[in-house]
Amino acid sequence: MIRKLIAITAAILINCAVLAWFHAWSAAVVASAAPAPGAAPAIITLPVIHVHPSADQLRALRGEQSAAVVPPQADAGGQAACIEMPYYSFATPCTVAVGG
Image (cartoon, rainbow, N blue to C red):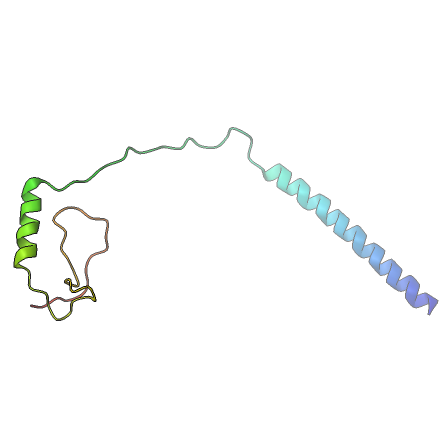
């Protein structure tokens, strides 16, 4: 019985020593891999761009909306499933087929 107790105590002490060594080693590796202060690259801030449709584009859009017929594939709001934007948009291209 006493031999088992000594073996368990020795195993715990060996594990504690290994964990302490691993902690010291990993802390040293992290400290040596940390970048030097002030070595971060400069952040480039781009100017804000506001996109507004021209008067002709707005007139064309209003004309298209008044003459538009809502197809049977309309969404729940009663609008057409795909609306073509008269100016540049970051939206994904429409892939739904809209028939009149």
